[in-house]
Image (cartoon, rainbow, N blue to C red; front, side, top):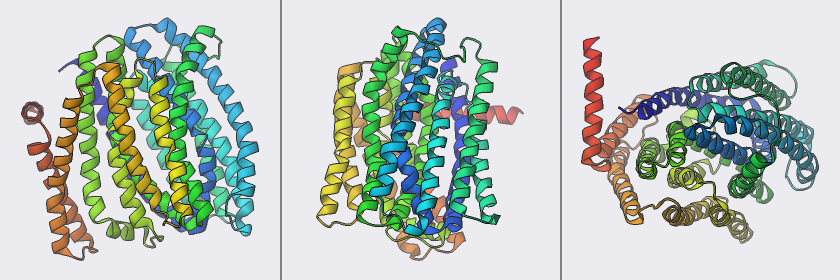
Length: 510
């Protein structure tokens, strides 16, 4: 096996361990946090914290930019330029944090005071949630270049361990809040911020000890800054569009309805985040390879990796989502006990949107690898931004809150069509081959849902835990068989059989 493939699969295993632990912890944490805070405070936490999260487009755009440049220079073996880029990125992040805090403490505060529907008795708590969220955002922002360097060099063990430790601490603080007196919402966000302090210290110490080729000192280099800024400024536009789609709609719902609707949507996106975490664990291991292969001129190899990544990431989401879509009411009842209104429908629509959006990840990375992303971000970002005005129009006409997710699904399809066209221009994507691939994914999905639907109809009532576990086991087994027989090619089946037999043979020898 190629060394790059071995490293990719090794990192994938690390990331799946991380994903599984964090997924279990997060599912438990949401249930406990909802019980500790209550629906109103949980909704306030989501919508007020979401105002600061709206600034995360700065973090996500810079993270993707620095990761792209780090991976590109590592792929070319240019340590000198890598050192410059790291130092410049530190200075840029400090500047972005200062600008973000100024925006948050002016426009953000004005919006909270004048636009959000928050009960008077909880307004002071909402204010402190906002302030601690600003501090947390700043700390997380500063940790991004360190994290990007670790991921770009494909050394995932420390990243995985720190992520698991972070998730465990978040669960611990919910327990602390439960047994403490005082305002539980304020106490929770204060302790939440302390975790971010621990994270930035850990990242700094690790990079200082293990990456001698970079210096943890902010330095200025005009050429590097221009290169980084040009890429980031356009990538940021795409991040703003995603921000509007997610947090903008959250704020919009609060303006038309109440915090309980935000709680329902928040729960739906918690489930969606579990699914995206699952596929991102795979994608995070592959992403540096796509950029590195482009940097080294291996375009055909990169194209092949894009096709394979698209197929594998889609099937990973499909395995989780199909059973979940069918038995969602039972899952929510067992998980949350008291399920807020609108949660089931919101979650089903969010899952469908997540399945579609999974397809965008490999194309995005490949298109952005060459650094010339102006028109790509301008076109796709503008399409995604249309979520907000269209959703506002429907809500103004009196439609239910779920209409926002139906709009999101339609926009996701349109944006993916634009990505396919850009991929053709940038790296020669064969549109016919890609559409055949998408058709195969769709056919596999239709076949894979037949047995889970029939079993669910036959069981009628599966609130019993033993029936629920049995249903999930049957569904997963059937979906895996369908993917194996229908979803992958004969060559891929032969390769899979070879590696499975090889591992079995090694295990027998031991």
